[in-house]
Amino acid sequence: MLTIATSKGRTLKHTLSLLAEAGIEPSEDLSKTRKLIVPSVCGNVNLVLIRATDVPTFVEYGAADIGITGKDTLAEHNSDNLYEPLDLNIGKCRLMTAIVTGRELPTGKLRVASKYVSLSEQYFAKKGQQVEVIKLYGSMELAPIVGLADCIVDLVDTGNTLKANGMEPLDLIMDISSRLVINKASMKMKHERIKGLIKQLKIAVDNRR
Ligand code: AMP
Image (cartoon, rainbow, N blue to C red; front, side, top):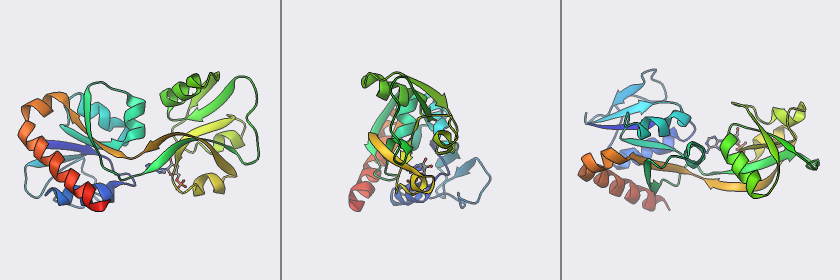
């Protein structure tokens, strides 16, 4: 049995289509089910549905052999105990700083709102900019408007969410896409099976380029 952890986010459709090309199809509609573990039609894979931010933890501890989640989540989690063999080239977006349109960043210590506390701290430390990062779990765009922060660090795709809230993107921190991650022990114990799956997924990814 192979266990694959993923989440019900905006990339689920693309994830499922890649998995289908690798011969893995869930036995029920993942976007509708309330189940957290769904077996594949062939019966030798279990799909585990969890929050994107929990995927690295499940794979790191071996609760799942394989995980599919965004590079943002993986970089924030920052574990040495995961293999990351494949960029799935889906869920593409950018991790950026953003500010209220037309406003300039104040001098001195900045207040930054983000759910990416560690990535934000690293980014501003590299620039030699002192910051206080305020951890938020959502609706980041609100923070500068209500005076909670000077700027935000968040994912930007079309830029529409920022625009709708009177904000604009400032600097690119990193390009993001969904990645395949593998538990190190599983890679040894289930080597042939996992190697075959990586190969099939790579073909599916390359076919879409
Ligand atoms: P957009 O309005 O298209 O720029 O999308 C921005 C909003 O969608 C923000 O709330 C982001 O956190 C979220 N978002 C954008 N792209 C992704 C992605 N690939 N995965 C998860 N959330 C995303």
